[in-house]
Image (cartoon, rainbow, N blue to C red; front, side, top):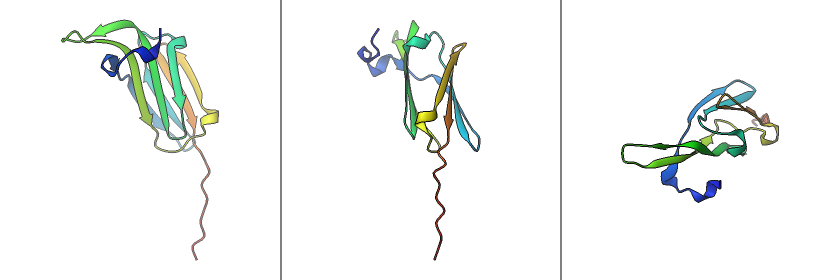
Length: 109
């Protein structure tokens, strides 16, 4: 199934928890009714974007059908996108993002 065929009205945002230590950012995303192979994950130095098809269609009281999770998460600090790791287990996507340490001290004259 093609993720691009759905409009914004069919999307809902998944639950997200962001944790941070001195060396990394941890993002946990709750993705019920999702298969690993349907997850489209994109990472930049400043943000994470997740899109995925939901296997079970949900309806609200107005009979609007939701069949896609989509979320863009702005990160609190820059990360090394080349060293990002992601694991999907028990409907939780766990993303580990090492912080960029390119901080330069400036001598004040």
